[in-house]
Length: 214
Image 1 (cartoon, helix red, strand yellow):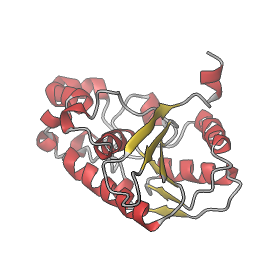
Image 2 (cartoon, one colour):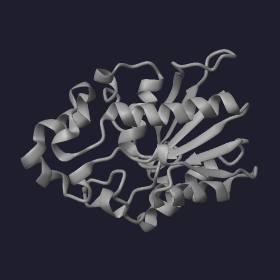
Image 3 (cartoon, one colour):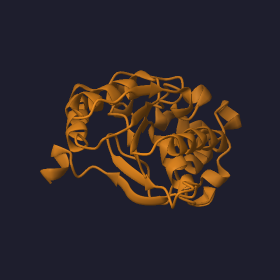
C-alpha cells in the first residue's frame, strides 16, 4: 500500500522567511495555486481512498486544490494531528532575527533533532509531533486498502516521514526538509502494514513547471 505525502503550497510567511507553525497561518501565494493544480494533475489518476489534511488554511486549500483535479471522487478528512510543529513564541517572527536569541536550538531544529529542545521558547517537542502524525498514518494504513494522501507541513512531515521509515532522531534531517508542493511516498511492508515503512520517493517536485524548465 502506498502512502502519499505533500507539503502545502508556499505562503506569504514562507516567502518572508517567518516562522509558521501550529498556530501561525498565512495565505498561500497566488503562484502556489498553479503549483497545487500541477500536483493535482500529476496525481489525477490515482484512486485515493481518502485525503487526510491538516485543518490549517494553507494545508486545507492545498488539499482542496488537489481534490479538484482528481479523476476519482475522494473525501478530505481534516485532523489536528497533521498540524505543523508547535513553535511557541517563534510563531510569526522573522527567522534571522530569532537566530540572535535561539541560534543553537534553531540549528538543531534544522540539522540535529535529537538535540532539539524547544522549551526555551515554549515549542512542541519533536517527539510529540512525530507521535501524533505517525499514529494517524498507521491507523489509516490499517483502515484502507488503497492509496491514501496526507497533506501537511514542512517541519513536522519531514521528521515524521523519516521516522516512519526507521531513521533515528539524529538522522531525520540528513535528507533535508520538504519543499512546498513536493511529493513523498512511503510503502507498507507485507500484510501487517506495521512500521517501519519503505521510503520510495522523497521530496519530488519534478512535475512542477518551474522544475521542468530548468
